[in-house]
Image (cartoon, rainbow, N blue to C red; front, side, top):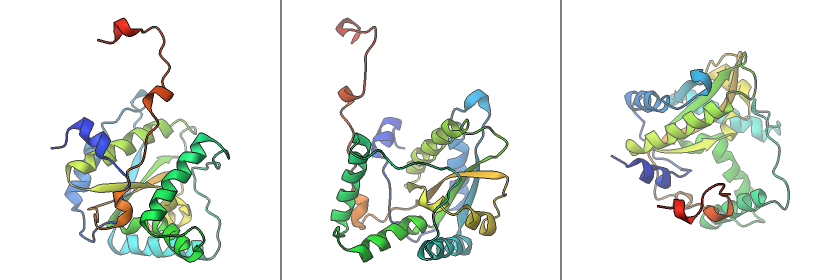
Length: 230
């Protein structure tokens, strides 16, 4: 069993998986554990569709076809680009450089970069994907904290079973694909997807270790001094 502190430190984004299927019972147990996450006033706003097999392959293909056609991504969860010259953009660039170096993707190689981008729309070739959504009747963005908490729990609980995960917004870039092929109702707002499976540790990008900002740079102490440190 993985200690909770070790699990938090060990968790990482897995970008390629073995073909071995994940048993349905294990996926059920992961979600039963994950839904112990906190939610605002115990509203438990999360809902899930778990996709695998031929249905997942159909969705992968449809996503890539949309991308190849030039269709703009239009996820239900709309986000803006990062501010240029910001620390947030710098961190994004740093992790991309690390991945591209490991994957031997030169900056000028547009074909390799395009193939890499498609991996996210294919759920990184995982044998299963978990789509997380909320009812449109809930005022937005009220449920987002709840979804963040349960998503982290899913990723941590997966480690107990030797599974890896990758939280993927590319997998929800075209909501109509999931409405059509996974049967998710139009009354639901699709928030995020999670690729899940047994990690392929021979895949170079799976060796990435993302950096973290030194804690001293992001904490402000109020009302505590060295006498409170013990």
